[in-house]
Amino acid sequence: MIDKVKNGFEIRFPLYKLVREQHNYLHVKVDMVSAMDAIVMAKTSLGHNVLQLISTVDRIEDGVFQITWILENYGACTVLLISADFPRENCLVPSLSQIWPAASAFEREIFEMYGISFPGNPREGEDFLLESWKDTPPMRRDFETEEYAMRVFGERQPREHIDPRQYVGDIVGEWNTPMGRKRKEEK
Amino acid sequence: MGVNPATDPKKTTHLFFGPQHPGVTGNMSVEMWFDGDQITKAITHVGYLHRGFEKLMEKRLWIQNFPLVCRICVPEPDINEECYAMAIEELTGIEVPERAKWIRTLVLELARLAVNLMAFGGQGGTLGLGTAAMWGITFRDFVLDLFEELTGARIYHIYIQPGGVRRDLPQGFGGRVEKVLEKIEKRLPELDRLVLNNAIFKLRTQNVGVVKPEWIEEYGLVGPVARGSGSVRDVRKDAPYEIYSKLEFDVVTESGNDIFARVMVRRREMDLSISLIRQILSKMPQGPVATKLPNLTEWRVPAGEVYSRVESSRGEYGYYVVSDGSLKPRRVHVRGPSYVHAVPLLERMLVGANIADVSNIMVSLTTCPPEIER
Image (cartoon, rainbow over all chains, first blue to last red; front, top):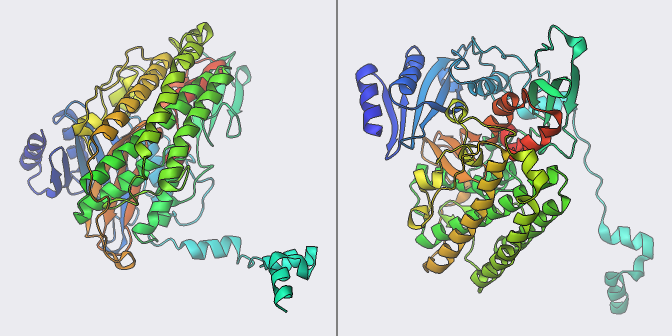
């Protein structure tokens, strides 16, 4: 089955890049213009008609977001990963929510976490995990967690340290603790 | 039905269900609009548990993430350790010793049994059968005793590691597992009589919370939710990992499409887990249980990307792991089955449902909000 999928990509997208291939697993990378065609081909012609996940990797050093769609063929028990790089600035990725209803939730999360817009998703912008988040999208590599925490929540006061021996000693008397009795005997 | 909440706001009731409600599975909520007692629209709200695990994982060494990943699912943490370890092993090429594979499968099946006991009893609990819920929790505790002995922890085991498991089985562990299985098996018929033979339970679960078979591929449904609607999809069978290919079992499936069918799948899954555990204990080979790992503070996993998947008690569970060859993961994306079950599926299933069935339907999907929020 994986050979059939691979052949489909070789014929239709000769410039595709093979990332990983195994017995029931294929990961390919295509250019961003071909991404939607590749997904539609995988669904309609290659039997991978179940969307399992949409994931993003922030490749900030290359100035791109790598979007990966993970599709499965339940009948043949195979998994197909299709990746494509999209420019990081004003990133727009076509929505799949008209093809798979489940895509809407994945895309809403990516919009919140990376700031990637999915034109065509009717629920884009609806709060998903973060409520009224106004800062840099938090899963971007240039979002500094520590700087954000310091700016928003301020420096946390150090915890008050209590020496347990002294604490118990203050309550029951210095020589009434087991250690205190031992020290007293030694004296 | 027939009332549009947008155009007729005065004719609908607007209700927030959860996140703090005994009928809600975990920390999530559902915002609903009603016409009478029938739901016309539902929106799932999550985010109450978002702890930024995936972001944290990018800032920690590969091995430091094991205490994090198990916390993504409280009732069944081992699947996270297994998925993450499998991904690292795939990227590094580390071999897992044969005995370690058997022990890992034993742990995964014990965890599945514990979850199904709790979920089966919990389904009764939503309909007022408190005894069933308590029994489910009690029997789960017997399994947790075994985990405590094996791993030192009852909930978060941090036992599976790349290249094997943390330690071998204690002396006589198999015998103690068998005793617990016998104890559970002895009580299961009583649990059946209490839940499955209960007339009210049948009335409230049959033809309620229907998952249409065509939704399985449309939404990417997995596990008992899909198998309760006739699907035969099970990663243990379809893409066997560890030693599942050496065990004899048939995929549990039902065709009722409703809550009762999903409960039956979980009930039969318990029998299956007991059978698999016995097979594992009788066939487990001797040998080492871990491969020696390099210096973990300087461990660089080769650059690459992989999607590893296992069958959890709720269905296919996946980890998409990306390494750039550095000391820390570049990206770890957790794909839990609750993502589609609790958000798009639940929002669709609830339309047309009765207000009294909401918690019943939610529990039948055994949604686990931390999987959605990571």
